[in-house]
Length: 174
Image (cartoon, rainbow, N blue to C red; front, side):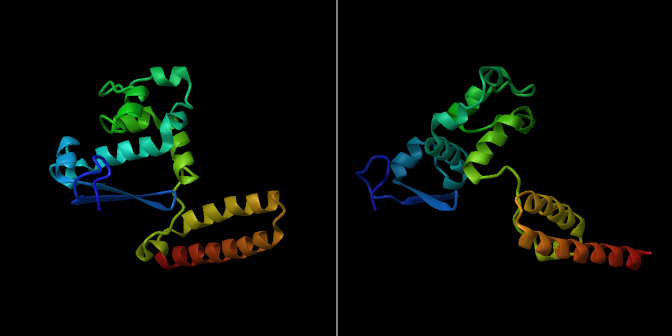
């Protein structure tokens, strides 16, 4: 397979990322990888993925923020939202708090949501029924609002079962 940058040399480094349930792969030759700063492929993953995401999203998605939001800069490292758009990388951990609202827009566009609702490891499922209960109650309200009464009944039963599980757990602790 040829390098996807120069299209002349054989690709020796393969980088893959999953975005919106689609696997995206980047195949590079050693020379192009070195030019992009990928001496050790693992050390450059954040930069490559940042650039890959920026390339996939285009600047339109990231520039949905207002001019006022673009003027905000990180109090710790001084990075601006515009600089993040160009680099695809934050300067420090404070950037995540500084650009929280802008990130919500981007994450919603990439993943369809800005809240993780996936599975937890099985060892945590029993110890965290309160989170399941809260999520089920929100989903129940939405099902009722959208008049999906069949789903609402399923959620009602799940909520009751979870509440019993919580009570049983509390009794066992006492």
